[in-house]
Length: 261
Length: 374
Ligand SMILES: Nc1ncnc2c1ncn2[C@@H]1O[C@H](COP(=O)(O)OP(=O)(O)OP(=O)(O)O)[C@@H](O)[C@H]1O
Ligand SMILES: [Mg+2]
Image (cartoon, rainbow over all chains, first blue to last red; front, side, top):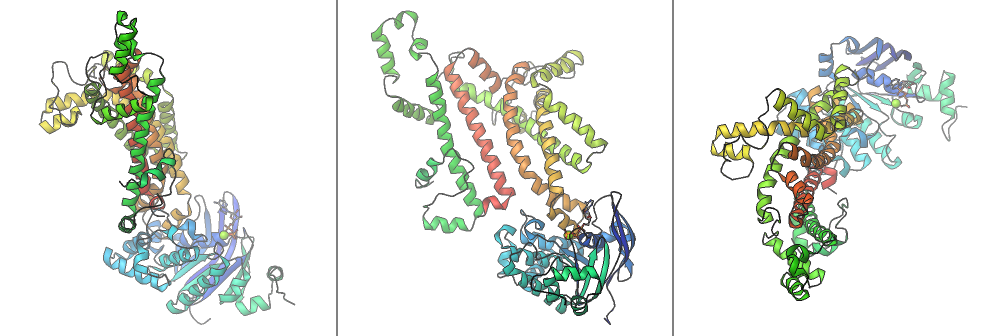
């Protein structure tokens, strides 16, 4: 709790098509920490994440602040925001079978933003890409670079998506249900990888998930959202064992084999 | 091509969609080709195309034999047809007394020697007729498809990016007109307006009257004239080509605009496009590398169909513009029951369709690695 926050969301509101989607979200993510964001479907978790990347659907109106090391992303001119996107803040999506381009090689998808943001030449970018694949434990990284997403399993694809997100050494990684679309057997591996990267690289991770089990396994901080508001936030141990909000309690009670008695 | 491909392919010869490769290839070849998935893919598709080409000859042959009409009646005079001995001799001479399979083999053998028979109309070998008609049509249809692809894809992309705005609405009207206006009517109208009324178009045919064709290299006058450095001929050829080609593009531009628009819109909604934006890539890179790449797959399919539509469009357009191409030749041969010529045209059209299909298949493989890599 002593480290400064790198991403600080305060009073974030979002209106889409005349509907209030977010009603003043407050969240603080610190380097080297995994901040879990739970909440029922439609509570606004994904929208919160997309807002931080400036990728909200067209017609979205926002209020409040999203500060990345003191810079408000919501008021940043589009060009400067684009320079931060994928560079300082990056995102891993839910389903790697749809979030990787099926017709572009892994190498292409792993190096294009690398070359764009860091102005690397082709060869250096390729070296770095291979190193990244090693980092996310893809076997034979050099060979993997010339292959295509469909030649990898779901878990490997998500690791590749994580490598892509990490390529430019961002400060903040937003992972939107990164294991939901994966086989149960590989979920733990991907989560462990995220946790390890967070610890090793001092990455600030905002981990969106439905799954409180996932949450209790790797999150440092936990926030619970409902109807576009954060209803509870705090260290994992406290929130999961001694929830203050009634809604958190119902969420916990709905977990199989668990109870908050 | 190893003969071992043949049996396994013949079974599914008509099924171009079947993705599986022939099972029993020699190990060495497999080893070589395993390193070059694209080469293997091309080889497989080409082998299928060759088999289909044989199929085309068979279909042409069978259809022509199904046509009611006696070759002897056509080949002999009125008097001779009454004499059974002469008829029998005629049949024997041309191998018509042999069983059909033998006749087919003879026909194939002749084809291999470039013998397509003699046109009853022009009294020339059909091959000679075709060798001037086919390049004329290829020039026309080729120019039309290139223009259609460039304009249609550009229109479609712009319409998708400007969805529901004024540009999109305008393009929608344009493409709707393009696909719904009958080609022959448009051809007549264009000829009337640009030739009779405005005098902008140079009239019918491939060149100005009195101009001689450039030395034959490809048979495409524009290309041949440019190769020979005969610029007046070149510009005359371009001028004559422009109007009929543009008339032909109307339908295909409309078709391609509509399909490209919907393909791009569909791709824009994909997760991987959002992911590409989340990487901070510039909009141009996202459009050209991520969006267009995926949108091209359906566009290529439609482009193949569009080419087919173009070819059938040439029959009327060539007749109206007196363009001495395959369409005009086909029209003349069919209306005068010139069977050898009809067979020749059928063969060429079949082969052209095959080539277009092969090109489409190959493009799939080039665009989409999932097609070529297992
Ligand atoms: N493109 C859009 N236009 C309008 N409303 C949208 C759009 N996308 C999402 N919403 C609405 O925004 C609200 C929040 O959605 P969001 O996707 O953030 O929920 P979530 O918490 O991520 O849910 P889930 O767990 O199902 O992913 C929902 O009520 C949803 O209907
Ligand atoms: Mg969501």
